[in-house]
Image (tube, rainbow, N blue to C red; front, side, top):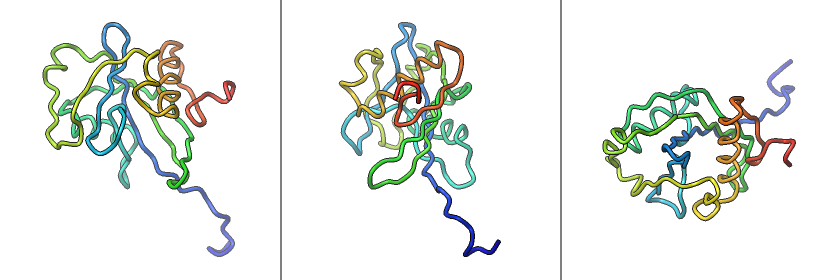
Length: 158
């Protein structure tokens, strides 16, 4: 088969984020300086970088923390208008201890604030596509089984 005969393939953008929790099972959200609303720590995967490595790098860059990242909680196929196909990973970062919280620093200015938010309040802080993805990740963590999602929800929920 020649190059001209090769069928088109998806070339999705890939991003990875982390879910940190507090002792009350609330999720850590961060406020990016460059956009409205809140997000979870994370960002785009660079060429040659794994999603897990990107997640660890983004936590270090955004929060100044060297965190231990567990398994993925969700992989979400979530194409976005004007951005094309996307594959988004959320990893389990466990409980953010009080010692870690006092170490948070926004050295690059990308993040301006952080807070813990209950799952029931996520829609008030972020776009619905992200709150669906985060709730799917929380459910996967409680089940102890990673989830596959499309547009933030498991296919059985669509």
